[in-house]
Amino acid sequence: MFYEYLAEEPSSSIWFDAGHLGDAYIRLGQIYGDEGNLEKAEEYYRRFLELWDQASPSVRDRVTTVEAALERLKSGPPIAD
Image (tube, rainbow, N blue to C red; front, side, top):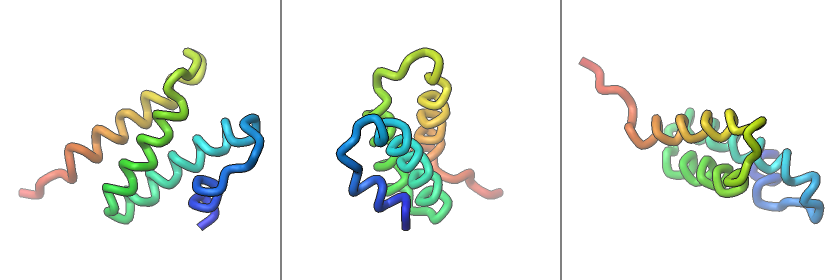
């Protein structure tokens, strides 16, 4: 999977990785979450949050979105009646 390659084999350019690596982490979190692999989904969401821990206010909404996705993972799937 391309996203895993990008996440595990970043380039030597922080200017390239800064934008693309974050996107790869988010997408991997989504993919693994959809597959039910919550441990891997959480891993990649946390990696995004570490990478963007000092995000400027203009892009802070991305961090907030990932924090919300991580909280949904932690709370687990809804219980059916």
